[in-house]
Amino acid sequence: AAFEQGLEKGLAQPSLISELFVARAARVLGALAATSVSDYLSGLLIGAEVATLGQRYRTSGVTLVGDPALNARYSRAMRARGMTVNSCSGDEALLGGMARIMHGQD
Image 1 (cartoon, rainbow, N blue to C red):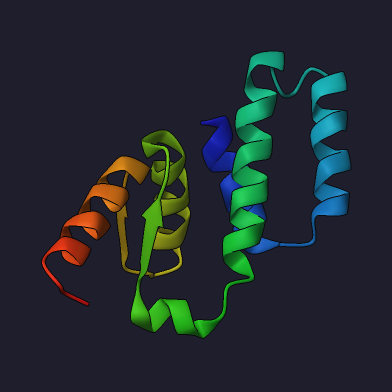
Image 2 (tube, rainbow, N blue to C red):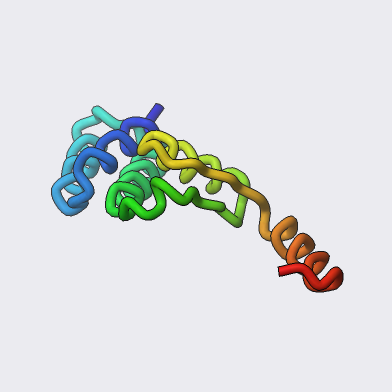
């Protein structure tokens, strides 16, 4: 829930400075649980990053390579912006690339 709240804010307003202070104030005032702060900030940062991506990625699609949990967060944000997203682990990408090289494929 905290991730989604941060994601919504980040996608809507990619200027982070004011939202970082809002998050701090929410924690100090008890409106945001200590256990939710990292999820909220993660959503805020990922949302702000995705909000600044150009139109190019909305039409060509994106492949995320990395940790499945982090890929899932980025994928959620990108899909909220209408992007087509695929993902795989680093190991999958490495093995797939090596197989293509071995078989002489581009």
